Amino acid sequence: MEMTLRWYGQGHDTVTLEQIRQIPGVTGVITTLYDKAAGEVWSREEIRRLVKEVEDAGLKISGIESVNVHEEIKLAGPERDKYIRNYVETLENLGQEGIHLVCYNFMPVFDWTRTELAREREDGSTVLAYRESTLESLIAENLFTFIKGDMNGTVMPGWEPERMEEISGSLEAYKGVNEEMLFQNLVYFLKAIMPVCDKYDIHMAIHPDDPAWSVFGLPRIMTNKHNLLRLLKEVDNVHNGITFCTGSFGTDRANNLTETITKLKGRIHFAHVRNLKFHGDRDFEEAAHLSSDGDFDMYSIMKALYETGFDGPMRPDHGRMIWGEKAMPGYGLYDRALGACYLNGLWEAISKENSGKGEA
Ligand SMILES: [Mn+2]
Image 1 (tube, protein in one colour):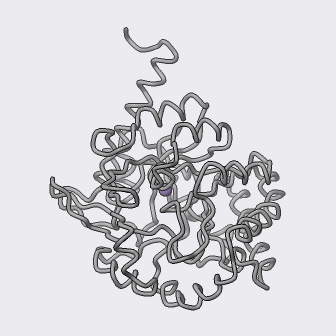
Image 2 (image 1 turned 180 degrees about the vertical axis):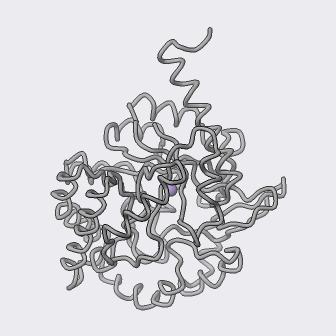
């Protein structure tokens, strides 16, 4: 396992590479070319510059999150093959620059969805939260306006203003697309990109839908163990894998996290580990990473990853906003650094227990 932190790039992230370098045990970043629109080709020069910038700071790029998938691919629109060719070209360029992990998602229109970005908790920290009844009271077009006041002046991934302007049209386009069609479009995409992934040993790691159910009537498929396993079987190549995100997959309380990790053995290429505190079904907030602060047993999650031989990058996921920090909601430095240390502590204990190297 390699502990990493997500970094949005200079000019986009309030956190610097120098700060990340000082978190004990964090050796890599998960990053992206933040200005690239879905469907655009990433050139080798642009990738090389990013690699150099990260390496000059004493870190490495452990993976890309994300190379976004164009809606035409998800919709099987008339330009799907063109956008798949662009995606393949980007993967080719990433592979040539030594990148071997790409996280992506296949959620129509909306990326991750929350109804609050700064819910205040008892200790004065603020966190992202979701309540189904609030979402149901909104129409999709208004969600962005509803939450954007809490973005601290940042542009959040998946919630770019340009993308929000096109929402009505995008929602319309999905009217005739059901979950099975979306699933087949994903399979088509993966089959088309596997050759370049094989050539450069690039692990594709799909992120589960967040939350793990349909929002605003849009189809969503990466929502449960059955669908994840079906996808792995349908494109049975080790380069077709999963980003196991506990905070997304775990939004549905019917999803058993440790059991699913065990079932996905060998195909989890990237792990996002965070905790949720539930107030009811489909009503939760993002807690601190510590088990006792939320409803997940983080020890069991880390143990399941350890026992299935997980050896990819891991990152603490969304953190709380604490100590007066102003940052992109979920992506401040302080609470994610605490999360990284806590997860590293659990991992050290589990590894020593299992290798017999720990003190009795
Ligand atoms: Mn995640």
